[in-house]
Amino acid sequence: MSSKPERSFNVIRTFTDDQGRSQFDSYAVPQTLQPFAPPADPVFVSERAPASGYVVIFMPPGWVGKPHPSPRRQILFCLSGGMRITSSTGEIRTLGVGDAWLMGDTTGEGHKSEVTSPEGASVVIVQFE
Image (cartoon, rainbow, N blue to C red):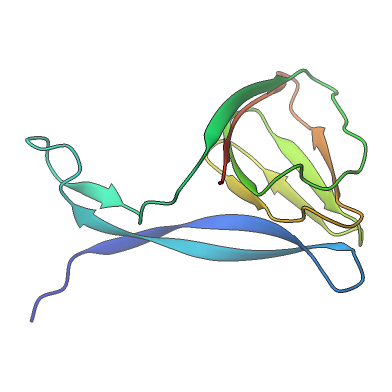
């Protein structure tokens, strides 16, 4: 029995705990080598997730957002620059090019986001249904 080659990518996640505080954890998204756009060669593909839309955002150098819960469940992919995310408990995670962040803290105290790179930060946010 042969298995398909696999790999994964890591996603940082914020969620709201029972006290309404934003917390961090992370999870791996598995990807399996498979045809995606034949006749192109196979690529590593994750499972399909339903989404309702996406936005492309540029935050200028020095941008700092006020603490807030995410307006909806959504995932951010960092295209350029860097960011610092602070949970309401004070825990910090940094994002750089290629990093992913699932914003699941849609209630409670939320998180604070800020740009850390001198060139600003470009991101794509995919919103879930």
